[in-house]
Length: 173
View 1: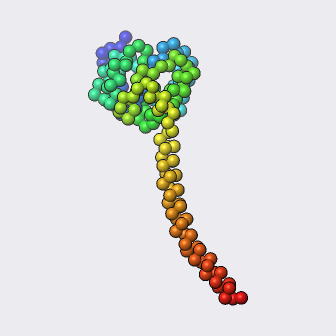
View 2 (view 1 turned 135 degrees about the horizontal axis):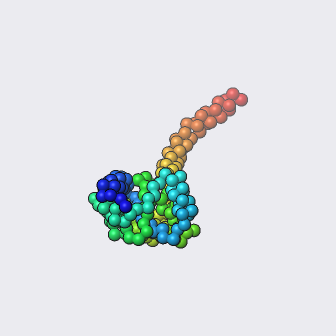
View 3 (view 1 turned 90 degrees about the vertical axis):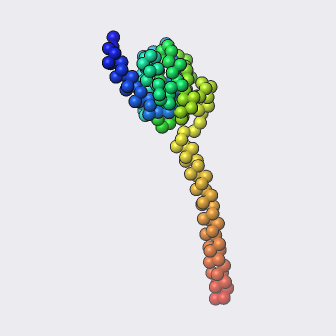
């Protein structure tokens, strides 16, 4: 059994980790085998995402005063929290894909960018393109207009040179 000091130290560590993030999904993993749990942990680690099985009482205390405080009431039963300070879409994709194959993993609640989301919205979030892909699409759209403008502006002098060359050829003959 942990001493009070050990529990306070764990709460402080949890508060520090969870205080840095605005994206978290609380899941239940009851009935999930150890092998499947390790598979999930490996997938999240490869994506540079965080996952912790937590003691409910300690986690309730740890989230007080953080952006994850609205999740407090969902720390009941076998609970784990997956979180990321950067990419909520990738987090939702990995967990949703894993949950499709493993019915034991169920969503309890979620927070994205500091806002509470409904459980049904987690699937919608998982279907969204990643942040990098959205930035790439935006840059393509912005760049394509600039390329069209550059092509149009270069066309006028190019056509002028072609016309002058044709006139010069006609005068030579």
